[in-house]
Image 1 (cartoon, rainbow, N blue to C red):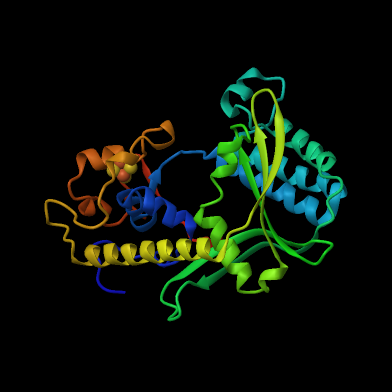
Image 2: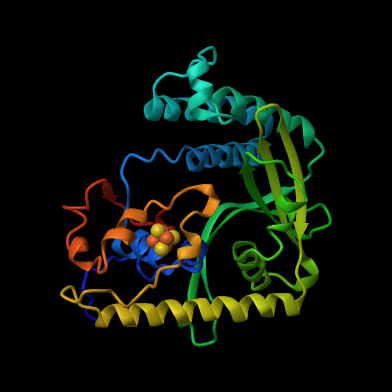
Length: 314
Ligand code: SF4
């Protein structure tokens, strides 16, 4: 790699849809999070962890049915206690802190899921499959991905089963968001490279909603036409090109300059998801963030810790 004004990290060019989605949201945010490698210290990221536990449950049920549930719940309880201390379902503070995503609700949801989908007849081919695929003929742009599960239906068709948790209702908006989502189209592209079109059923979004008053489930099947896939491919290749151009700009940026040219800010994303961006103070106080990011592993900026996302190590 060329010389850069901050230390490079092996994960820089390991690109997946998480990084690209952050990059599309705000180039500067992606720079802080994935290139400088800083994130707010002490963020428990409970939603993320809760989603991981739900994935553990889904994998256990898919591979072992209801009989696998006690083991996976024991393992999750141990992880919960290691992260948050002992769980007390009678303590109202627990529900204030974790809102709808508590350990007892996770266990209830698992039993409800088994009952709701007792007629499932999937044969699992792969679970938690990590891989990468080239998007262009030259192999310059490679995307990494992780499929929750690939299953074979009784009619031998192939379905990607993608588990999603939310605190919102599984309404039409929730459903619609997946049709154009690059992560989902990457999965379709990947299975399209391994199986003939006639064998691919699509990506089945396997949704669960943890709302205050109810736990609900829904599934929607995503299929895309060849033209729709080409639209996605055109767009994602442009994202890759743009990101590589930003890295080129970064290589010409200088710690002594008053501003940093690479990875421009997007002021329209500062309040996304109704939450002030964790890098807001960085953007408001540093014209050039480079002097603050010279040795983040040992000396992260105040209030931040060093952490890089590497999809090959998830
Ligand atoms: S505060 Fe705004 S401009 Fe700065 S990184 Fe966050 S979203 Fe981008």
